[in-house]
Image (cartoon, rainbow, N blue to C red):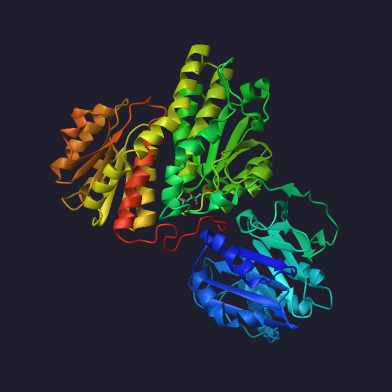
Length: 611
Ligand code: M6R
């Protein structure tokens, strides 16, 4: 959580910093701040709220700040200390010599803070991060890189940090452990940021720092070392990033744009990965020989949130298509539960951002225990795919809306491709492989057919926008779709929404049903439909209004329920994809009707880089 950007060079830097912060706002947006070195002084501006508020604060000072040559900035997602101006970053030492921005959590901050208090430091905030500024000041004897390294050696926890000093008008020291830092290499200028979205407007050459790397950057130089002060070499990667992909392009919200991008995004996930000759999927990034594939005897999927729901759909694929025992782990549980991992276990980490702390920890645990570890990820070069060493990129393009949409449909598509590959390596016949390929090829069209009826979904959504509670129920691989529908609705509309297996409803939750509690039943024409029709009757008997997803013109559903969202006819394997697209639209229009901040819901951040 939290976004960091820094700039050193000869251009006016305030706009560079605030524009960068806006692109990082999806990482947190409860306060923002920046510090620059100007005439051998640190100048610091902070506000509660979004970057826009910071811009307003800066407005009258732009002339004064135009001569600054180095600066760092931060947008915050609060962990320690409420979102207010005092807790906003940057934080300074008591002499006002150093400014620090930090993304991560310092686990031993209480111990460090008490020690610093005993030594006479005064604290201006309740944050864990502030200890870093005081520690840097204690260790500084003219070498900023060494002082920051010494400070960081005291720290347990995670950090992506940037530090400037008032007597160093062109220098930033940056370092990472657990929280990402990318360096942007420009002509006569250098930038640092939490991710490439903040850099892409300025450079197409980037360096990803590894954990425990520390770097001193100036406009012309980049010196990267280990925390032990040993020089390390990190290659410059080309950034293939279309900056317009991170704009709204006429849509009211990123979320809506990303929903409508799904036919293209899924096509990008599929492109070049279908091998018709052998009726399989070509997933070279997995880097597994047919023999190695055949040896895998168990799959553990580790992920969080929407990515976990995609993984739950994948579990059906691997067990049904491949016949391989598969389980889905909430990634946070994985390493604490002491999971049984054998050499032929595949740990499949799924993450849109590739930076989710719990999923990253699961990757590391899997590697430590000798598993084959692969990642399904969207953000190229993120930590999870880099550490996994093998995997599948989604190529969905940047997902900016905090509510994950196109990542889900692309993840499920990637999982189906993976199941096709594994299946053909085992029990799936050539004919069955070709049938699956045909189904995969239809996914973009199926999504488009749902999008073409967005106006009808909007009308239904508006009818239910006043609900206080809501249930989503499904069976089979539409059960994870129900969980995903509930997650979407609650996170952007703040309606209390629960996803349940339809059979589980009568084991307790049915007690909550009445005429004020709508139920969204996923009643597509797939195996299990008859049973969900009975579950719908149970809800109707408790007076709940029922909205159902149903396959084209399925009167067995439409005659029963209050409203129907039509899903095009498709196989049971791909059904969760168009169904979830419909639920994304439903949630979006409910939230819009309620006037919610759709792209940046309260209390959330796009990338959860803390445990
Ligand atoms: O980047 P990741 O896919 O690892 O993120 C996992 C979750 O934090 C994420 O899916 C979250 O649940 C979304 N806000 C859901 O819309």
